[in-house]
Length: 330
View 1 (cartoon, rainbow, N blue to C red):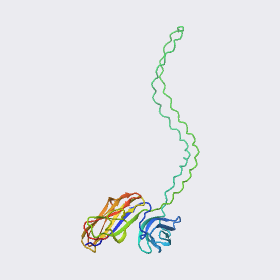
View 2 (cartoon, one colour):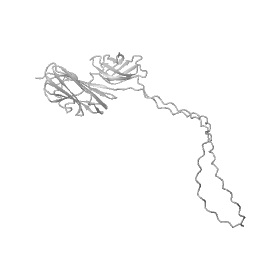
View 3 (tube, rainbow, N blue to C red):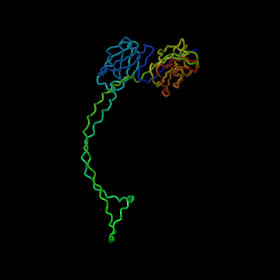
View 4 (cartoon, rainbow, N blue to C red):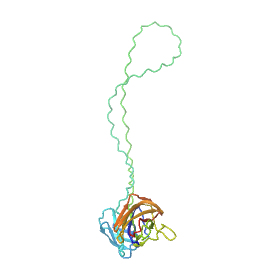
């Protein structure tokens, strides 16, 4: 005989764009943008309901000025500092809520630097330094070729030979001439335009809850990360996808699966049991997984170490495997 367990799974997906959900009962936020004056925020998504929703930005509850099932407009309190805030949107009819990170008043990137200005005028030339000491005399050059022999002159009287004179020192090097004048400065370049203001989505969460079958110990059952009812029985979910089953969610954008958080209880049927949850990508098991041991109580586990990335169109199912056949919910 089998009882039921309640399981609660959180898949934290970090990505910079829109997330989609398969059911409109639970609110899902696609994006949140403030107006140019920074006085209002418009939230786009689905599952907001026809009754006025409740919207909070951080610790401040916002005044809703317009709303529909897919769009909400609310006032931003004056003097709200720029930064990232946790946006809480609650369906006014079902009271179900979703969390979303919104960026308020973010400053865009700086524009490109202007061209550098022209250099200033050169200073007046300094006084010439003292003359350096004369260098040593160079080596004598090679002997030139002998000239042609001239006609012989008449023989003169032989004079007395005088003494050879000594070689005089080399003259000093003269000072350098002054520098020429500096040319006129060129005009300064124009200032570049300011960049656009930043904004967008930073993170979102998928939440699933269902009751495991009361049979099939050691069997892997599959469920979409967006199953949202504690009464959902997955006894027939033995395939990720077939002609009659589609137990997965298709990622609308590229993103990183950052964490798996699981809660399990079998209060109604006390018995020792181990429940293992594993995340799949395109029907192939990833390394993101964790196990919970229960015995008439509740427990939980987290895996934020084995992160992995997906691209637009990848499927994300979850796999449940029980060591025994004790029913439980998660």
